[in-house]
Image (cartoon, rainbow, N blue to C red; front, side):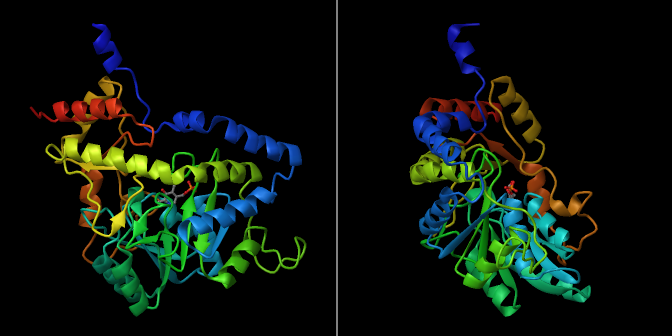
Length: 385
Ligand SMILES: Cc1ncc(COP(=O)(O)O)c(C=O)c1O
C-alpha cells in the first residue's frame, strides 16, 4: 500500500465534536472554571444570561432552558394540559422523542406523512390525520411539526391547517435551531418551539440540555414552575404536578461560548452542503432547500434507489468514511408506536424514505480535502465515471 493510499483511508469522524472543542479551547475552560468557582451548579447566573442570548439569537421574546430537548417538548404539552383523550399530530419520519412525549402525557400521537423532497410534515396528510383522530373519538389539540435534519418544516401551510382546526403548534426544532423560514429564525414560527443541546446537535452542549422558545409570557410562567416540580411562590409551594428539568449552570456556561461562534459554524456547514450538492447531484438525490428557507444541516442526507444503500455504506466504511441511517424505520412501524393511529391514506413517503436515505459526515470543521474524499468515495461507489 502506498503512503497516499494509507492517508486516504484514515478514519474520519461523522461529527467532529473535538475540532470545535479545540477551536474554543481556553474560552470553554475558563467558562467552566467560573462555575466551579462560584459553585451555583443549578440556577447560576450563566443560566439566565444564556436564556436571554438564546432568545435574542432567534428573535423570540423568551427562552426557558431545561434538561433536554425531550423535556422541552414534554413541558410544553404539560403546560397546555394535554392528556388522555387528546390527539397530537406528529410526522412519522422523525426521532422517537417527538411522539414519545405525547404518549407520556397520556394523549395519543396520530401519525402523518412527510414530503419526499424535504422529509418534513406534509400539510395535506396533517389535515387527514386530524380527521382520522376525530373519527376515532379523540380530541385533536396540537401538532408537532419537526424541522428534520436542520431544515424548517413548511410552517406557512402547517399553521393554516392548525388555525382552521384550532390546534396548538409546538415546533420540534431539536435539529434545526438557527435555521430560517421566510426571513424568520425558528423559535418564532410557532406558539412554542423546542430545541435540544445534545452534543451532536448543531448547537450542542457537553451533556444533555434543551430549551423552549416562545413569545407567550403565561407559558413561560407555567414552564418555569413545571421544571421545578410545579413550584408556586417557592420550592415548597407546589401548585402543579411537575418534574425536575433544569439546564445545569456548567452547560449554560459552555453554551454561552458556543453561541458566539454559532453563526459562523452555520455558514461553514452551508458551504460543506453546497460542495456536497455540487459533487453528488449526478449520482444521488441530494437534499433540496426550498426557496425562502435556510438549513443548519444537522444531517446531510441523500436518497438512493432502494437496494443501493447497503453497498454504499460498506464501500465507504472500507475507506474510513462513516455513514448513518436516519431513520431506518418510521415511528408508526416501531414496536412501541405501531398501535397508534395513522392518517387516512397511510404513510407511503415515510416508508419509502426509510429504505432510501443515508447520511454522510457533516460538521462545521470538515475541510475541503476531506469533503472531496467523501464526494470521490460516494461517486466511485455509485459507479460515476
Ligand atoms: C427531532 C428530535 N426531537 C427531539 C429530540 C430530543 O432531544 P434530546 O435528545 O435533547 O432529548 C431529538 C434529539 O435527539 C430530535 O432529533
